[in-house]
Image (cartoon, rainbow, N blue to C red):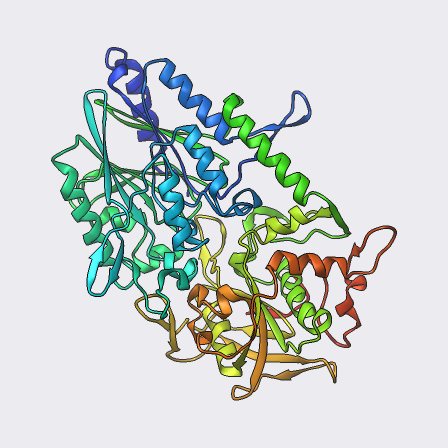
Length: 588
């Protein structure tokens, strides 16, 4: 987000520096992170030594916190969610490494992001128990046998200096659909864990307001520590941090996450017109933030680089890097053309969730190939959601680690039977914001459920308004009107032709069980589909096998279109040399 309020923030900073000398010891420094997603190995280019050096890491922000404390500053270290999922460093032990690192770093508080639940509810609660810092959320609850309980406390009050400061934890209502819905259900498939605001944004506002009211008379400052975001989808649904501020009273600040936005200190007025400072540090530990609360106001700044590093944390980091390198660093193949998830001409413009990309084709092809060629089980088509494809792979030598970074979640591959109508509904579900533009990111609007395909092609008319209707849990119910998706065709491996999708015919569909078995991204249309096979292997392992199936040129497989075993399929759309894929998805 462009910082429209930089002048007031800079002014407050100057005022603090001018007049705050006598009161400095009473100022409160809040160091914060959000959406780290396991990016603990960041590098920065140093022009002086013409080499890469460590960038912002847990070790650097820890050293900064230590420095502040050595100067007798009042300091709190907090995180706004999504720290235990996203890279192999998280997945290697289901998040335990990251929690241990945060313990050692001295975090005081965290709120769970949607991806904190990606290893299952049992694992999240186990990790929350191992954390030396509490997790808080005012709108996450459990309802079983008519009884409502709160697995996490809604708030936390700290006495720091001569002041008390209260934090309110807030979790995005998008959690259930963007994580795995099954993890929020009991063994009978009934939901027992819920996020207030999923059905009605007013429920979210009421939950936050109640939490504020409960602490307002006990603390001098009240800060929201939320994982809710300010993205286009959040604002359209009325569940963004901006909406929460505008519909509540009593907050002083809002430290946010989820939308991966860089907000250095924007002023939003609450329900009574009072100013609230909103901030977010971006994503992947590219930055960390510092909020300074003094009697003269609130100042905020974002650090994009700090060369200091705490030795103890650095040892932990290096040990993890070495472990992963030994296990996953072996060369698999040579990649001729980069597999992109972003615009080749604008690397910060992520496109994998809004349009066809060669990486999306490649991931879907790996499942399609695996069933049809490796396992000799008929697979009519395969799908891969854009939100599950997390990284590009640069040309040159590639390793299992590169593949794992593309698909870090450890999703299992399965094969189901689904009707043409169910397939059409799933494609439509992924197209809800296609054609819209997110000006915050200077990028097409994203939907993590946007489906990349193999053995299938389809067209999209984005001028048709989305008519997808969902239930209170964000699950697909119906399309109430004209479909945006059209001209859906399935590849026939016998004839080498693409044929019109028959809405009444049953097809075999391959993909991750997150989508096909567990209703991920709201894809409940597949919930009761017959299973052919499940748990045949992790997605990253299947992709590695596909890579190893390419023809060798020298000692290793050379990854290019002509060397793919699928290139032998007559008339099959495949073109890995084109960043935007082979024309399987045509968007008007």
